[in-house]
Structure formats: structure tokens, C-alpha cells
Image (tube, helix red, strand yellow):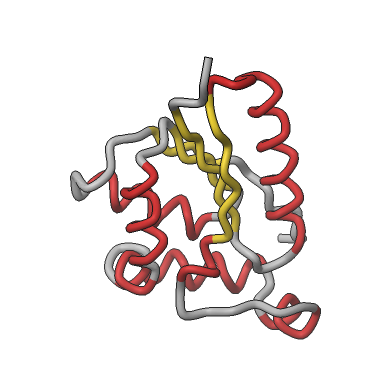
Length: 131
């Protein structure tokens, strides 16, 4: 049986932990789904205006900082700033979007709420920062 469905595992590049968790989840989902679903790992930040490149950015953009920015702008600015990510999701038509970072979760949820995307959005806590 060929691959007919897609599942997206999305992370934010602000810190390596989000990507590591996304890769681990993708491997597990792939092993469970076998050849019935294709699993794509996407970095939501690569579709938006912000680029994160190593330790200086990881230090400046701590999980708490990024989380605060995401919460402040989640209702109106993020869906616009990351519309390329939302468009990728709409184009892919995944059965589910599993997010290890708040940013792709907010953008995917906004696409679902607007009616552009029909899928399930699952947010997995991957923030191991100190409160």
C-alpha cells in the first residue's frame, strides 16, 4: 500500500531541543504509521521573517522570550508573519500537525480557525527552560 496521507511535525528553530523532540516524534510516528503516512518535519521559523543561527540567537531568544513574543502577537501578527508556513500546511493537507513549539501551534490553529485548513493540531511540550 502506498503513502496516501501526510502528518506534519513542526518545530521552531529557537533552540535545538524543539528540533530534537520533533525528530524523535517523527521517527516514532513513522514507525507506528509504516507506509500508510508520510511524516514531514518542518521548521516554522524557516517560513517566516525571523532566522535563528546558533548560540547568540539561542541566548537572546530564550524559550521564555520567544514564548512571550508568540503570546503577545499570536492573535493577529503571527498568522500574517508566518503565512508561508500556513500556506505550506494548507498545500500539504496533513491529517495532523504535531507541534513542539508554540509558534507553529498558534499559526496552525489560526489556519484551522479561519477554515483554510482542516486538520488536528497537537501541541507537545518541549520547553525544558528554567522558569
